[in-house]
Length: 523
Image (cartoon, rainbow, N blue to C red):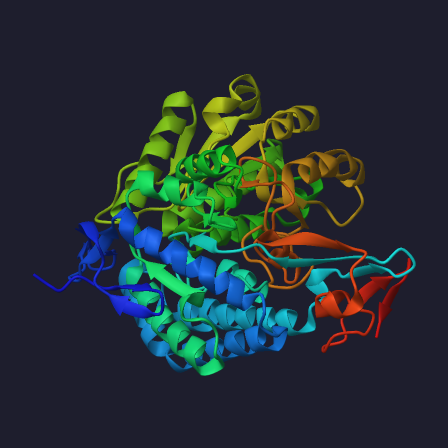
């Protein structure tokens, strides 16, 4: 039996107070990995929380530049260990080394950390506001210990130690308690090793970053509800997200959840008439890239079943049928995808390509289904469901009026796409459909599939329930995403020398924009 991996608590690696153990799964080889990882008892969590509270108090006194230095140093260390991180991610997720992990996800991860470092130093996220006549001042400050639960599908860019939630929380001056995903624990440990060294090199409190590998479900709910927790960031399944959201909100704690998403795509008639074959290729690539394991994968595709629509269906069916079995993240995910496809077929959807059954251990063939728009309108609860993986549902509508009705049945999503023709024939339909998508998605894209997003300040990666909550949530887009882990404090009538530097009359280092006496100024 292999040794059980240690946990990182209060600045040191030590054996866990383990209630059980688990192993990750190698989906490419189709077998469990050798190393054992602990499922911690509450004692580990309690110690981590106590250490995080002490660290939060110390972090609140440190210069913003020191937080930025840590994030930059951490990024440099991750870059130096990039080959090992990519190899571990591939072994535990089956995601391709190139281009997915080495050329796309690792660079994105490093860029996020560097952007967070710049935001920490620059401090505009703090939105300092000064009314010097009334001597009332306010700014945003760290909220306290932040717990991060990561998803399975982005081991680096959304990892509990490497991802955007961790970067945003640290930039706001909060310590992080990282709870590893059981699908890729090795990445979390490798990253935590580098985080601890970066903490030491930059003089941050030892418990700035802590790592627990596994928790019982009840202890996870207890953790997010603990009064010592400032906020929680969760990305993952709707089933788990709803439980944690309920536990945290019942206790009055802040939690940001990013969950399932159907990401509707609407193909207007002129667009299909102009370039239906091209759109078919884009859809197939969007659904099967990384085996469809993106939170922005299109799950519902609405179109009018005229002659161009029929040709589109033939083209996309042919493309799906030509792609062989793809490796999914895990056997459990493969089973859930099969259950989802079976449910759609039982409800009345037609299988055009692929199948519900797995094609091997953690392997599934791309699957395309179709349903009439009238059937979806009659029973939306049967068809407006997420099937996470390389499958999607075409919704063939008899008219634009029926398409509009069907789109109204879609619930909250992270993204939505609207394709229109270039000759102006779709303008009226575009004007009618676009507001429906804006009401149902955090990001609405014109003439492009929803998969793939840029890590840039105006990006919105959140949406109406049940895709995310609260509805102004965004996991991407610094400095906006930092505000999830901050709270606003007002200082009324304070003596200048007692004020935090950010709200004093003299501008702090970094020269952030501040709102002074009814005017935004940069000093």
